[in-house]
Length: 339
Ligand SMILES: [Mn+2]
Image (tube, rainbow, N blue to C red; front, side, top):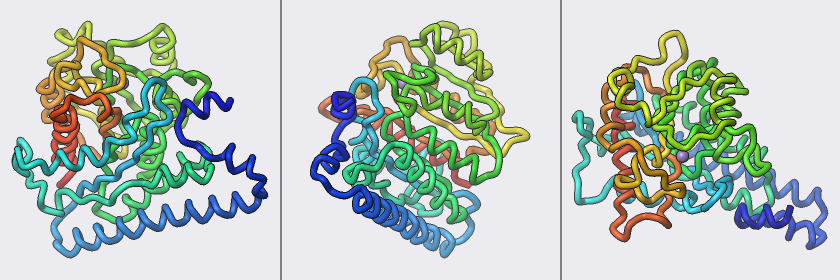
């Protein structure tokens, strides 16, 4: 057990316990840290909500929320360091602030940022993943509370899509359709004994009834269990080996009719590593960046929220190519959400 905790990163619960601090004192402290964390997100979301409402005219406005969590990864933990790198690349002077279809990102009615959920501080005081996932869900709901803000979450590893999609579904009062771009189906019942693993998030989402349809696109690393779980939950899995055949359909999707909206989850490793080498699980044979943009640009849907996950800065090229790729995904998703 301690070896597993070590592998999942800095976690001080064992240390706190061995220091003979009474459990009641630890719990009281944890509650106060969680309260402070939620206050931070609530107040930042209120600030950005007031700003957007003061400017007027926005029906839906994208707001970035960073979730720097990497300890539910099965291989490397670098995605915890992604949010600041993505933000930096969004505003990189080498490009301009206009999306391909003409949205202005420097207009706060299009894009604001409510900062990061303080994942490290929450874990440092020994909070377990059940509660951490609840804090992430509550944080997303706090952003959605500030109409017209819509969350675009910066991961972090893919484990965060479960608490985020749970929040979106619960807040909207019903399931959403989910478009999931990934090399992997992330639908193991549990991975290495961890039900919150980044390889299990979509099992939790389907069990919870948070998604009506789940379309997985870009799949090219899938086991027998991945296919069986896909069948069990009625997942529409589109594998890369048949992409040339499926392309016409996938580049003209219409989703979300009869449900509360559409959620898009983009694992950066959906892309071929030639386009995005800075990921933990390099899997050749993936989508081109233009394939992904065609799917997103032509999608007919009310996109209510999204995430971009699994960018690992520790594996990026020295000139930060994958950071720019992740940032452009965020930019184009912002355009898709904002109205
Ligand atoms: Mn993946």
